[in-house]
Image (cartoon, rainbow, N blue to C red; front, side, top):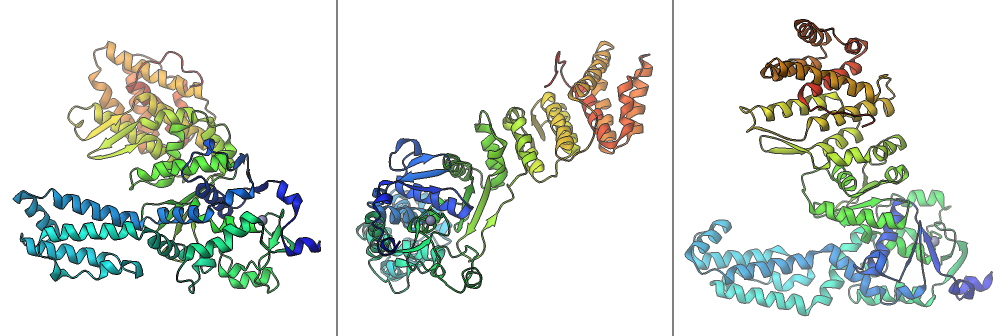
Length: 561
Ligand SMILES: [Zn+2]
């Protein structure tokens, strides 16, 4: 035992690849982060540095060769400040280069809210550039004096000079920016320590890359608290921050570890935690970062977070969770396991404030996960169905999922989309209401909501899908009857009256309308419609299905649809 204590020169371990398993969300973010840093943008399937094995990864120490540069580049890129400055300068220069027409001048002056005068425009531009970025590395920006720039030509030269400064000193920016960025997240460890004012990379190399690569970390006899597989690294001090917001403060560490601030953790778990930021994707707002946890497999974890990246490029007004699920359904041809759905959660971290990360409630129940899994084909069909009221458009799947995940879905949704469908067909209203879906889609959603009430909310409706389609056909028969009697103009009016009575839960009006129609055609009211009296939910399903039949096409066989 004593040999192990001093140096990690255990030949047994050297031959064995290092295995690290998925665990809690923070650890998983770290594992993903480590992978992202190591692979530098390469696809997971096209690399041979790390072997991906179900719920763990396997690698040899050699992967840490060149880790310092990779680590810094990844942080530099995620932080993104440098690139955004460069882009800004480039764009502005490009714009000034193309300014020749008076019109362009006027436009620029208007944007800057100054008189259309070259001297004034130049002055304000110089002032803006100078004030925009602050900090030690930006002294050449801070030195800019408004009065030194009186022509657009001089601004162009200034921009070129600044771009040159950024390019030449990139390495300085890398070290400083990464330090600023990561000390917000990781605290004071290693190169992030306040006292390390230069050569941050060197410090990182000495503290992490070299000992990891050469197996030179001093080890304790205790096993790693986290993985349990490797000896803990000597003097790994938890409170200097593996992760600032992890939620374990000094007090709770003292409580757990007998007032010993040294956390027994191995060198691998330590680097995993130290990389967790790289598992995040930049969110909508500057300081918000998101991560999707999925502890089923490393491959899923990777794929889900790749998908998140594409979602974040999309419409920023939308609810990220619903949008994510929507994308997942639109993409996945076959959702094979409800377990997969159940374990997805989205974690949002605000790096500006030292607060606990927000974990969105996508920890859906097993019941809900299997509901989505069992109905994924139906749901997928809704992915491209939309409606538009005035200028606002809404997607049916998204709206359904939103209600479903938050337990707010009800038959009023059916009522609404039926109404929009009818208004869309009405030539006097169709400029305000567009419905890009069919009655079949409404019927399909109606059955989904019925199933939801039965399977998730445990309500007993005693109605199977065949009965619901049977009622649809009854409505459709009435439509045929009206058409045959050249009364098709009345269909919309009747449907509206029925729709209003269903919305108001007014069974007697509903039955009255139907009774009169059947009587006028000397027909008997179908018995199944009397079931409307047996309960609110039953009435909603029967009422809507009947209305759908009245509005929709004739479907021959709809068994088990
Ligand atoms: Zn460990």
